[in-house]
Image (cartoon, rainbow, N blue to C red):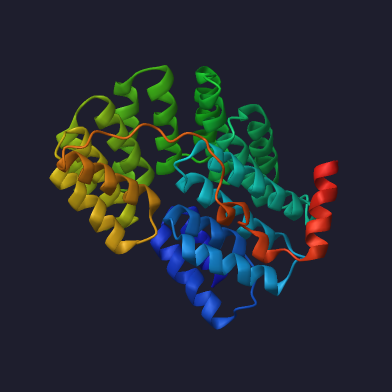
Length: 332
């Protein structure tokens, strides 16, 4: 069944992948096969509490496999992506890299190790180092995520023409793949024109009407071109085809841009009803509430000290021996 879950993940069908992985865990809680992919799915779903529980459980099952360490690293990635504070973001990213390094110590031929490292490095704006990781992942496994990571690295470094070449190469490896077509559209949007990008996104949706990569990319393009009604219609149309909390939150952001704060609050609260721990929705709801009460947006928070709770993230899965090994890695 883990193979089925992995196939669903590769197809970009996150809800189905999550359900199958959960069923696998019920049948065999000690199974580690594709457990790192399960963690990746939970990151994409924003399931913080579930991923915390899964990563802790996996570490207790075995510390001699790469998958448990990668699950903890993915948990740090999720905390990094959910954080609204730059200092906390960097802290969680660096913490995640330490866990990814533990996974690499176990296996240097596990592609997901380099996927995780690349993602975390990119969040630290280290696009060159991240690109090397995604390239290594691509050498080990021709996964779409590796192609996507490489393109993201070149775009982050503003090397748009190289990003376009990498996207074209990805499409040549996966002809008629809607996610690869979408990736090409994303690169086109940055270095050619919105017209070509839109054509690519619409082509991807023709092949697979439920390709959420294409939906999200087209929404972003509509917003960039101030076609807000089109963005809202597209999000509503696909509200139940993907992460509902994300879709409601994104709708809330579009309504906020249109200064429709009542609708914005309603959508953010709908996201929180589905996922009470969803930090971006909490922030969005607070902003909309403030505006409804006549309070302007607050200034960006300064980078003060992290809370003690933040500093202890991930410590619950480490023994004294693990901490000693981590200190040795820091010294190196």
